[in-house]
Amino acid sequence: MALWGGRFSQGADSRFKQFNDSLRFDYRLAEQDIQGSMAWARALVKVGVLTSDEQAQLQQAMEVLLASVQQDPQQILSSDAEDIHSWVEGKLIDAVGILGKKLHTGRSRNDQVATDLKLWCKAQGELLLASITGLQQGLVASARANQAAVLPGYTHLQRAQPVTYAHWALAYVEMLERDHSRLQDALKRLDTSPLGCGALAGTAYAIDREALALDMGFSGATRNSLDSVSDRDHVVELMHVASLSMAHLSRFAEDLIFYNTGEAGFVELSDAVTSGSSLMPQKKNPDALELIRGKTGRVVGAQMGMLMSLKALPLAYNKDMQEDKEGLFDALDTWHDCLDMAALVLIDLKVNGERTKAAAQGGYANATELADYLVAKGIPFREAHHIVGETVVYAIQVKKPLEELSIPEFQRFSPVVGEDVYPNLELEATLAKRVAKGGVAREQIEGALVAAEAWLAKR
Ligand code: ARG
Image 1 (cartoon, rainbow, N blue to C red):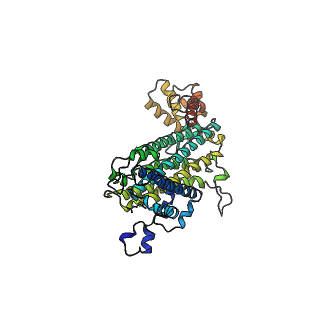
Image 2: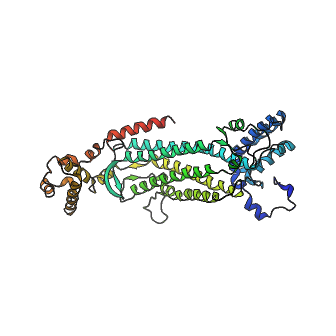
Image 3: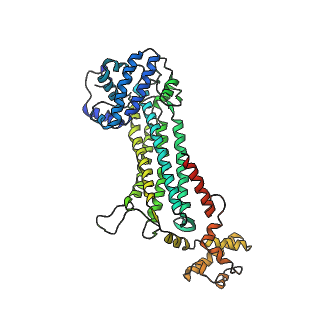
């Protein structure tokens, strides 16, 4: 039975009911709806609406229901209740009869759904924080295991300067650390309870909303009832955090897809996260990474969709707001899956140190070192840059890397070049010079790894 049948003489058109009902997705709020209802029953005792005995009976029925939905949430889907709030109320009426009908006193589904969703976001947020940390730990472990590997660093996808695999992995640890902090920040901001705001104007019972908020695990109660029932900022914010983090994961995926190509051959992905082709027997496709890259689109799309649904919505609650859930659930589930899948990809990732080193040595990636060498000999950088440019053109013509040019060949472009140029062109030397904070010098990377290991161990 619908919660609002009294005013209606005609039943809902089945097509409208199908269109309007939200149970098929909001069943995921069952635990939160029951927890919020338990707290609401306690609050109703304090204002004299329920006796302690009644509250105890309701509490007991709700505990049974909670255990049942925790064990089998899918059971809810077989009901034709309009939404999760109707479903829970119906179940309580089944269990305790008329008393179940008292629970909704002073409450509206508007403050109820807003509360349920915030409770769900808090719980989901904790899982996501753990998954971000898990991926960061995977990156640090992979960096440690391959600490020796040199990697060509790219700009414009052209080999630019040598870096190391660990430095690359730590770059993603940094991105994920910002995602972690953004998520914590969003969770802090949504940590206020709308319960007791009623439909829009506030509840007509003198509920201690602060105490009620604390009872549910919120840090406090919201301040304005109109805003409370129609605020979905947290939905957009969480989807934004997810979108930006997915953008990071898509870059991670794209880097590894490229590193895994036959052309690069820098890494080999495990059989566990790749698939074959139905036609071409030689293929091992990076599906896990491609899906991470591809799913970024739907997460960003969900955020945009919600933002558009909120645009120009008049105060306070409107049914448009029911559109908040499917996109949010999908975006956060997708983000969660992708974080975990990225960690899985790293577990058996093999780095081919020979290939990465050969690639880092090629492509004239030590040209900057030659320029710096000329600067050390007193040539202004701009001029040195030009000299090296000419030298590289020559080296390409004679098909030699810079370190294989003879001194007379170097001297065609600058007379200051002497024997001491060669050590400067060695791969390790180019790394070793980058000792400033955040640079690729071995000791900088060791320090960054130790620091990341320490902060991650504390979580
Ligand atoms: N299913 C609804 C939602 O998700 C619950 C709130 C319904 N409120 C109402 N006034 N019809 O938004």
